[in-house]
Amino acid sequence: MIISDGSGISRQAQPSSLAWYDEIPGSICGPEDGPWPRTFRNLGLAETWKKLSLVSDPQSLHYGPGGRWRADSLNFQPFPGGGSQDRYAMQRLNINGRMWTLTAVFDGHLGDTTAEHAAYHMPIIIRQFLEDFSQKHGGRVVPPPLIADMFSSAIRAFDEAIANDVLELFPGGLDSVANMPDQEIQSILNDHLSGGQNFKKARLCMYGTTALVALIDPNHENLWLANLGDCQGVMVSETANRTWNFEILTTVHNGENEREIERVQMEHPGERECVVDGRVLGAIAPFRCIGDTPFKQPPEFTRRILYNLFSGDQDTSLWEEFLLRNITPPYISSTPEVTHYPLDPSHQRFRKYLILCSDGFTDICGQHQRSVIERWLQSVDSSDVPDCEASNMALRLLWQGLGGDPTSVSKTLTLDLDVPWLDDISIVVQSV
Image (cartoon, rainbow, N blue to C red; front, side, top):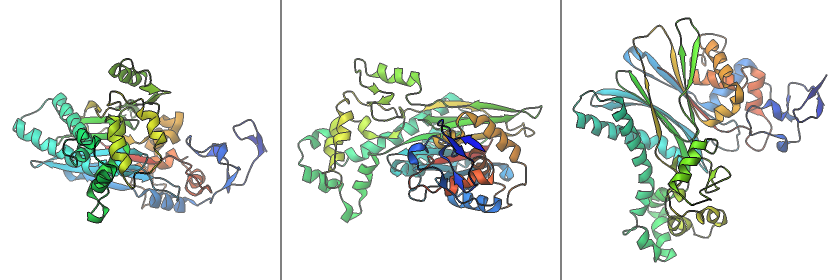
């Protein structure tokens, strides 16, 4: 039998132990990664589920009266040569004896440093803001828009602290750093022999992460979703006639969004190169995110402080390409787009799921995301997978996104390539 490989070239049908690039989901793997076909190990059903679970390390959080609600999560990168730059968070926040629920996904770029920092510390900051907010209002019912404002303020404060923690190392701020010798700056920053705390603070400024954070109130009546970047939130709701409604709750904050381009251009009038080829300063894709301090501080922050991390002799040519365009920072926003979604816990008969995912999951689904979720919904109540894996909703959703059968999933788990063939994937599935 002759079949097409997607590039106009015909090929003979191959044994199941061989895969072509167009059989790997997503946009990362391509013909340039050849020669094709590449080998993979075709695992059986039980072994495929076991390996998928091992690689993605699924976790669960039960909450509400009698564990009525739950959140399942995972972080997946099958390439054995490197770790995932995605992170997620699932936490209960005890605010004066009342339990809020926080879930989140973070998609790091340039490294995992800022994503790791956000996954650990952002829930702490949000809890502090909630405690102060609750004390201020004395337990009174607060309108959802005020909670949304508080939520946004907490995330902005978290981001601002990344740069401020570094500037506080230099009394007088950037003005004092301007005439300071490089060796003196390096001695302050590269404090590895005394614990490396200053170094860790400065290193956070070199990386960034998108953020999608969901917050549910103690009565389970309101959901707030704060978005920075290109992660996605989807609400899937069962109807009275047992069909499902799909609602995408987020917009992407990158060059695909004309409104984001217009926003940045309006904030920097007369700067023709504030957006170049759909990228901020021609260099970075997300228009809103945590970290990425060189796009939020004046160029001297990067030249005098970040250039002096390590020995200070690294190649800075790529940095200078966009720093020359950095005239009136900030160019990347840390103000999240916060949406409010009312919940109705009294409707116990109808199921409702919130899906939070990094863009790695939307990439493997492509134009078929709705059908992937529909297949997942059909599988939620089935028992056709090993008992040890059956309950984790995020793992089942990933299985469907990777093809929904042992052979397809085996290809993405065991493909013989020496470079990553899938983007990092983080998923949180939450019953609401």
